[in-house]
Image 1: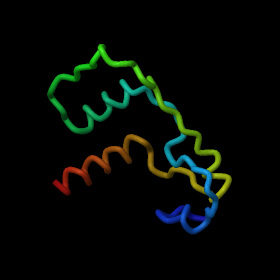
Image 2: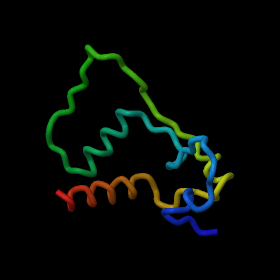
Image 3: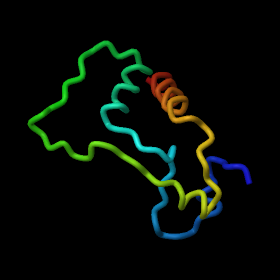
Image 4: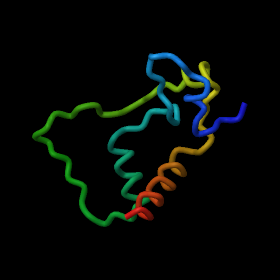
Length: 92
């Protein structure tokens, strides 16, 4: 079975949420640095230390998506993020 953009809507009919992602953990700081690199941002990143740290990293298990409807990310994370940024810039 080949994943399509509509795979979950075609194959999953349950009320429980399912995570769809790259299946690995990345720190918020590393994600910000990657976005800076991919966008060519030349400004300064300022972390507001007066606010709570919140969640320092994010990991979403994609095991359920693979089990329930055969989803497995085919696009490497950095490539997908780059394509998303390019799409966003093209719509502005």
